[in-house]
Image 1 (cartoon, one colour):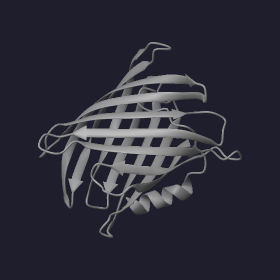
Image 2 (cartoon, rainbow, N blue to C red; image 1 turned 120 degrees about the vertical axis):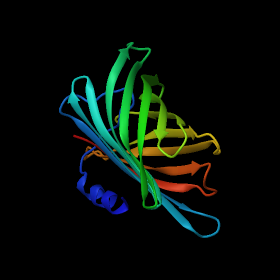
Image 3 (cartoon, rainbow, N blue to C red; image 1 turned 135 degrees about the horizontal axis):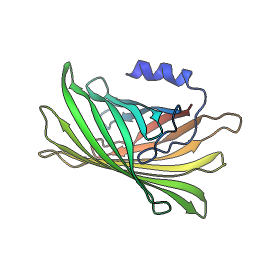
Length: 221
């Protein structure tokens, strides 16, 4: 996974702000995101995780995509999904649902996994400019594992400025395991002579003592 993401970082040459979750892609349009997080533990060990996300507007009311993540070649997952709208309430926000099917692995062993997501999204107007809020709740069933409950929140600004703030919070709970959370405050960097967006920030998780560094690249096409 790490080598794939390195290659993709050189390939992606245009990108824009992401409106995920409850927002669907227009027919014939897509979005890709690659990201790498690195951690240096207090005992001197280094850990990393990488991710690849892609979605495509197959029809006006149907977006398909891929969500993959790998933790230092030790464990990870890959899920293909389909998203469809549930309700557009205008200013109060919108809702969408997503169904996913894929596999997860630990070492050389792999098993099937299934995911159902309910997403809420809302555009924001603040004194610093327009932005968005996305809330995703998910149930994830992995064979040979317990049902996982997830709640993710993303909030950010989308203006004409070179720099805009972004905050991503991910949580999940599985019976018999500690509650997990991850917080990623970042800056979105949009070069004035380009259309791509770099994401530079830090990441703190409940599983690591150290604060990690995170780098991502978004691309709309």
